[in-house]
Each structure stands twice: as structure tokens, then as C-alpha cells.
Image (cartoon, rainbow, N blue to C red; front, top):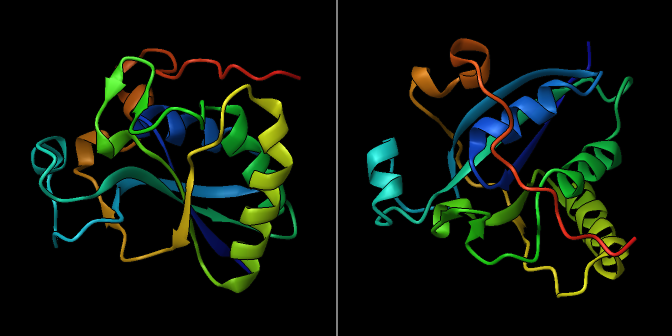
Length: 162
């Protein structure tokens, strides 16, 4: 089976992970940290704003069942990309909106997707689109958090104009 990876940051990784797990063709989603400068970061360190990392998810998907563009559509649906370093009540650089691209094709798709989405909001999109650095899986208790602990999504519905 042919698989690909995609990495997204859209606020609290519990809700991002749960949202991507619902997409047919997504094979696995891992919550973790990326985009910073600290090796083997812990949740406490990331929340302390000393690592530069974002809470993110690494999505493994079957491109014969779901396209990267479809994953990008899901990304825009589940958060408000106009909020800088926050999502709803969660505030801090670890909650930033970012697409971490795996190669030039994903970068082109992400930029085109952002440009298409820009008109859907009354404010500018602040989502970072950058090459994917090393991804560090979060501690086990963060994986499949809602499945293990119950609860609903921790995301706010974005203020889309369309």
C-alpha cells in the first residue's frame, strides 16, 4: 500500500487528531510537537513556551482513498486560521495554525489552498506554511485522548464568511 504523510497544527492537538481520524482514507494520526528547536520536547516544556514547538498531528493517509487537497479542506474546516497563536480559549504559540509540508508538491497545494480560503474570512489568514521539520510524538496519554477520556471537540467553529 502506498502511504503519505501530512502534518498540521490547528490548536489543541486532541481535537485536531479526532477530526482527522474521521476522514476515510486516513490510516493513522499521531499527536505531537513540531516546528521548534528542542529535541524530545515534553508537554510541560511546550506549554512553557520555551521550545518553539506547536501542538500538531502527523497524519498517515492512503492517497488512493483521500487526497492531500481533501486533508487541506478538513484542516480549514476545523479551526479559525485568522487567530494568531491561539484557538478560542487556548492561547500561546503552541496553538498556532500551521501546515508543515512534506515536499514541493504539498507546499504548492497548501499555498493554493490558503489562497482559495482567504476570501472565506473577514480577516487575513495567519497560517504558517513551512517545510516539515522533525516531528516528536507526544506522550502516550495525549494519543487518542477523546477515545480514552471521553469528551467532545475542543475547537471553535471558524468565522467563515461563506
